[in-house]
Image (cartoon, rainbow, N blue to C red):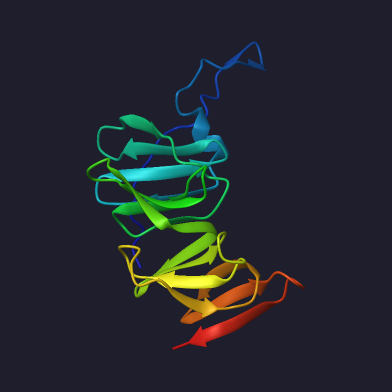
Length: 172
């Protein structure tokens, strides 16, 4: 397998004067604190506690996205999915810059899969639900209170609210 550089930027100036390091207000300082990243053809998205920084991979132009990162995040190659401050599942299109709300999906946690979106409903006893990519065809998938929902391989798993146990509720 051949290694391929997708983005490169010096994040620490390493400047010293008489053996004392000093900082010059480097705009790339946020790279030291990012927790994860994802990318598409044009941009790389760095995630940290304060938000998401979108960086053009060619021009290195930066844009700070006002997307909360204290909950679940998902990226499908074009859209960033997140739960907004009102617990509404939200989709940010990275190409158009448009934001769409899934107004019927009030969630405390969610995950995406090729067949749709799974989430923990804040309005219905913290049960697990699933819907299609447009937020329609909402169906219950597990009717006991849960804390989290996620995909592991081809299995859909939930974490039970009563004891924190993780169980598989669907396998392909």
